[in-house]
Length: 109
Image 1 (tube, rainbow, N blue to C red):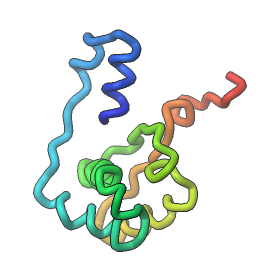
Image 2: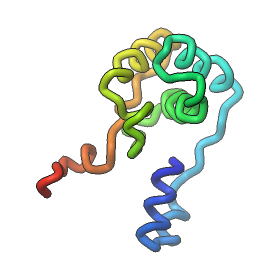
Image 3: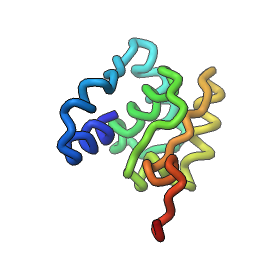
Image 4: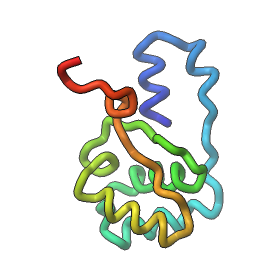
């Protein structure tokens, strides 16, 4: 969500930003699902903020949370672990991707 708001600001579109709903950190999101992601080594302890973003996406049922964070969030090595934890915690796995992946755009346009 934070990245999407930054994109709106970068596009100088405050009008568009008004229509993006904010997600609340539901009590069941913290610490349960966030800690489960960290404990399963899906993300390192230092990436607690990234873990919270993934947990909130799963708890709120987002289909395609967008990110440019390849270190922890959109990482091919950690996605299977994140998927396993989400399913074990009773949530659907949010298909984490970049805006380009969602739009079907490759680096050649």
